[in-house]
Every structure is written in structure tokens, then in C-alpha cells.
Length: 312
Image (cartoon, rainbow, N blue to C red):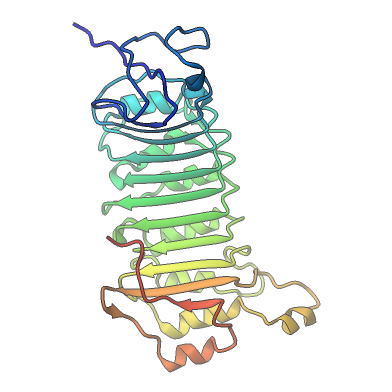
């Protein structure tokens, strides 16, 4: 006998686990009728429903007013169900998704998941499923936080995704080290021409001398010309200290120096740089050569942290 699709009914609270029961005031009503404004199963509070946090630990088809949601936190073990749900969420402005599938459903490439209003995306992704980027269309995206697991590269899928998301200003990579090479990272930053904020966590294999050279302000065509906020939180230092210091110094000017410039600098001036290398009680301390090169950068701009909030 076919199991009926559950329907969300009275949801003044938006937390839901689709494997068992709804939490707090969210309930199943057992109908497989698609909700609508005329459905007898829907209360007025549900009709105003805009935000949903849901975990579906099976292949359960959940019926909900997906099109009216603007904020979705979603985790689903079934890629077919997930793609079906996400394809109906056309009005999202913020989304958090956990993608841990080795196989993705066969969806025609000319029918992507359209998130035309999405501004913020938090995505946990097994890199074996990097082709998930091929499904997404996010032309208005501004903030992207990526948690990447595994050892396979994310290219060429991520570059293709970025080319359709030209307005990203904030980019966070929180990763297993081998997910991203320095070449991958340079490409990611190059395809985010409006980038102002960059966070790198676990990027020992990508935040290297090659990337630092690319980020150095050459005064002509620097990488990420709008970048002014940089946070690096890595377990190990895999770079040359003096090269890192020179890159930081190349993007700093005092107020008098800026005022004396006949032409604005090709790169933005730092507003905040946080550097943290190490784990547990073993933190890297920069040598005198590094500190001498960056001595003109104020301490409230260049910060050496002594804790880790990302690693667990």
C-alpha cells in the first residue's frame, strides 16, 4: 500500500523532523493533497508560514507551501526528494542545505533549481557531489558559506556555478584541506570580482605562496580589488611568512598616504585581517621579519587570534 505524503498543517513553530514527528506545534495531517489557500487542513498561521527548518531522514515526500518560503534550513537523505523540494522554493532569500549524496538524480541541465531571489546560501557538501552546483542558479547571491568534505576537487562545477552568481561579496570556505588547491582558490576569487569578505578555514593546501602572490597588490590589476576583510584559520602554516607580510602591506595605506594619492589605489584598504595558524595549544607565532614588514598596519586591523571557533 502506498504511503500518503505528509502535509504540514498548523506550524506556528518552524522546526520539523520529517522522519518521525513534527516538533512543538508543527503536525502531520496525513493528507497527500497539495496545500493551497483553500485547503481545509491549513490554519491561518500556516498560510503566513515563511521560514522552515527541516530534516528528512528518509525518502518521505513532504507536502508544504514551498513557494511561499523565504528562509529554509534543509537536510534530506534522498537526492530525488531534495531536488524536488528545492525546485519548488523559488522565493527563498536565505537557505542552509546539507548535501551528502554520492549520486544525484538525472535532471535535465536546462531545468536548474532557480533561486532568483536568494541572497545568502550556507552549503555543506561532500565533494563527491560537487555536481550539485550544476543544478543551482543563484544570480542574486551575495553571501556564500561552503563546508566541503572529502578529497576530490570541486572544479569545474564550482566555476560554472560562480559564472551565474556574479554578485558574491562574502565567501567562506570551511573545508577538508585537499578539497581546494591554490589554483582552485585563485580561480574562485577571480570569479568573485565584487568580493569584499573572505574567510578561509582548513585551507592549508590552498592558502599557500602561490595564492598569496596572486593576492598581492601589484598596483595595476590585483586579484579581488574590493577585498578588505580577510580571516584565515588554518591548522598549519604552509607558506612563507615574509611573502604573506608583503601581501598584507601591499594593501595598506595610512590616512595621509591615501590623501596624497593622485589616483585611488587599485585595491581596497584592509579594514580587518585575522590570521590564525595552529590547533589546540600549539599556535604559530610570527617572527620579527613578518612583524617588521607589517609594522604600519594598526593592531585593530591586523589581528593574531589565539582560539579556534571553527574546528571541532
